[in-house]
Image (tube, rainbow, N blue to C red; front, side, top):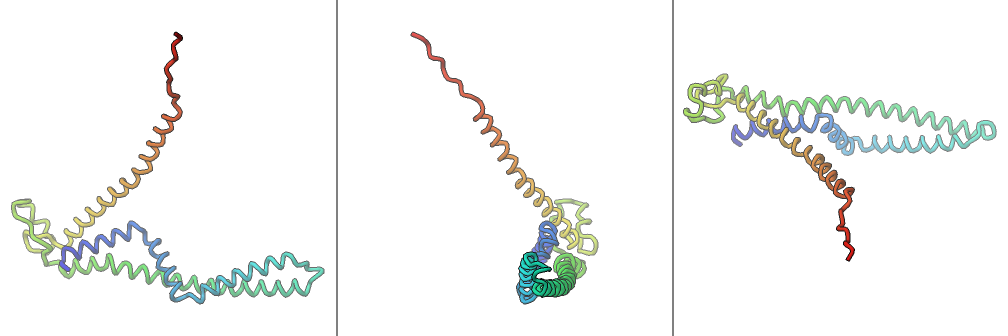
Length: 206
């Protein structure tokens, strides 16, 4: 893959992650991770919750005076279930915190980190060359900091890609947000037409 396409793809993915939101991506990744690696723990957590709710309902229906032995047994069972659930929740919470750190670090490396690495590695390379007549003597700044004169450097190309993608993002958001407004306006016009009584010609007497 050429350098120009690679940089554009990295910038696009980075902006896409920012648009969707890191927390949203982390939530989906954590859900998938639980289904693959923590399936037994999640199943155990669900069973404990169901069992505790069932025992609590039965405990509320049992008299502590008339059926003390049964009530005490249910109470011990509920307390044990709550203790097990709290311990399991603590373990899952620790695992989730560790997963969040690793996920955030991996996401940064695959997006922003790679952009820095490519920008540094190809700092003296030209992404592409521009015709001299396009910008005249002002072409020099496009090659900053170390690319050959008359070329576009990696850093400048990253900035240009980021700018274009963000402009496109705003255009898409405005286009999407304009649909509800158009629908509301059309509905208001329809309501106005419905509420306005139609005039009928008055019949003339012969």
